[in-house]
Length: 476
Ligand SMILES: [Zn+2]
Image 1 (cartoon, rainbow, N blue to C red):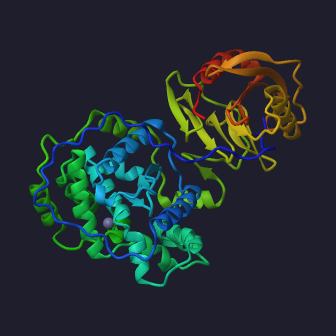
Image 2 (cartoon, helix red, strand yellow):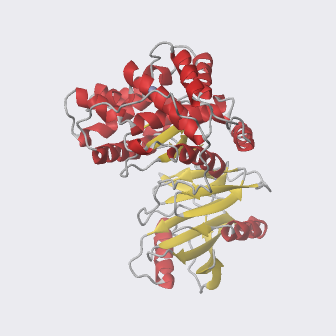
């Protein structure tokens, strides 16, 4: 089956911050804490937001953001807990805090002006406790609420916001690829937003301690994480420490601040943290940032899995009987077999086992699996929109049969259509069976799932496809 690409993208990559249940700020005694005053800034808070959104969009294009629900929900929960603990005088109503996990192995994290935060998988893997993860996040969050990125940029020339996104990303990725990405912009400009002075570092350490304490974490875990970063980072020094230099006596003053902040029964180790770490250990090892960004630049990789430039072999392992949940921003959720990887496009994501996915004559093809996506539709009529979808599939798949009609089924309680078509795979020349499900989103656009298996195996896969489709939740 050649993938559908006749219509354009609606799938948004935004993460939706997961709803947090009742949040109880623990009673931190905040008597003797060091007062922190945000530095002078010639940008407005809305400019922080604009700049951060641009740079975050670029980061998502270049870095493999994880779509693994277990990992992302966890980091979002820790993040929201910290956000709820920002002191009132440092809240900016314009800011939107988002938390995403990047599937790379370096111990690093960065937060952009106005709120977007990216935490590397390597950081979560290296932490010993949830408190340590929260420590780095609280430090990053403090740079955001104190508006250090734009304050630092205010010291230099006032930059045009449009100039900034690529440069910020260059500074994030660093090394050779960073320079390639920031070509044509000013490398130092990106650094201005992400590499902080020692004075700002101390502010972020102290403010981070306050936020941690208010959220029920022990600020000493921040100091512990900095030690972990120092110990576990390889040669050449960790990126995180070059962006966040030690102002001197870092551990001492954090411990001293922690004494003034006394937190009773701090959250340190949680079961969820242990589960998330165990889950990460079960996944294939994360690539390095350089490998990941090189792949992205070659157009080969997005999401957590590589994209093959070769044709699929069509030889696949049977689907695992355990399932994992995948969340696409605020659009949909679906459960798929554990051993199927996801391959991202602008408008769709394909879940397929290894060997089933590849490239044929310059087009993406798959022999087993399910493509889920959205397509723009003006008619707002499910039947007509489904006909158009099949027309567009037929343009890439000349052997595709035409539907005799549609069955009425349900997807997440909504009226949906289902049809089964025959096709001949371009890549394997074998007959295959295509099962198509469609439903309408509230805005009238079409939601679809296209399931593919060789004709001889369709009987075996059909039950699996039903199970996958019945797990779909639409969140529009
Ligand atoms: Zn810092």
